[in-house]
Amino acid sequence: MTTAVQSEAVRLADLIRGAGSVVALTGAGISVPSGIPDFRSPRTGLWANVDPMEVAHITAFRRDPERFWRFYGERFQTLEQKRPNRAHEALATLEQAGLLDAVITQNIDRLHALAGSRELIEVHGSIDHCSCLGCGSRYPLVEVQTRLAADAVGVPRCECSLPLKPDVVLFGEYLPPDMLARAEQLAAGADLMLCIGSSLEVYPVAELPTLTLNGGGRIVILTQGRTPFDDRATVRGSGDVVDELDALIGALGLG
Image 1 (cartoon, rainbow, N blue to C red):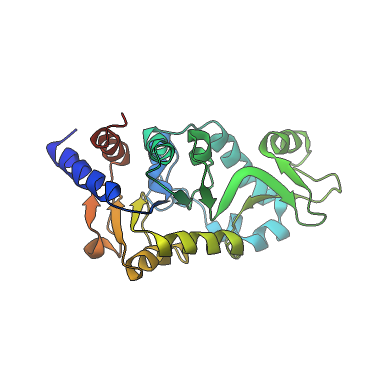
Image 2: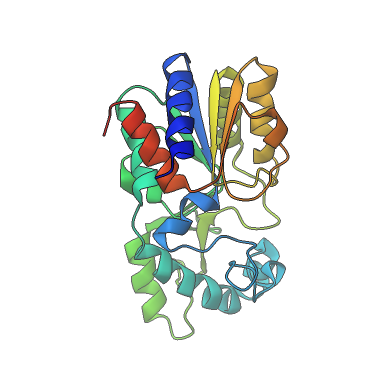
């Protein structure tokens, strides 16, 4: 761990100690160390070899659920086997220590929940369950996997025979209003927002740091690559989220 990372951690620890309300906003970058690719990296990103509008749009699901589930079924299997990394665990530790009010995440991989985060706002949903758009029945992931394997064409189906849809926000869908409202409330009331592993370019979530800044709070950015908020960040880390959050836990005496 470099001296620069340790110095940054000490500064961030001081900001957290002095803040009345701290929230974290996480994106795909926090899950990359768990072996989950981000969305946009050339060759390795989730959308590198597939058009998301063809396989991850609500219209695509309704039009061709078989093709949709060929893509999502493989992804579900991959994500189900992934486990939280030390960055996820660090945020859970901060919450348990009373130093973090909530985690707002753009991720659907459920790793924050598995790491132990309790006040968790999954604005894009979660792979943890699927629902029927017809009758409204909901099924946990383990049962969805069973139904997926049992179907002749690889489409998990409800008892009413309609295809199940993952409880994640697809392209062409709005974010759940209650989740977005809660995220906005937390952001507006935060003295400090930790932006971790997010490009801060996907709206409406990308507006959340602005709510914190407009309310007189500060933002910290720990992510690889540039973001639109770099020049407004009180601390700007390199984006090695595991090292940076490990160092923060040490600086707070929680390690």
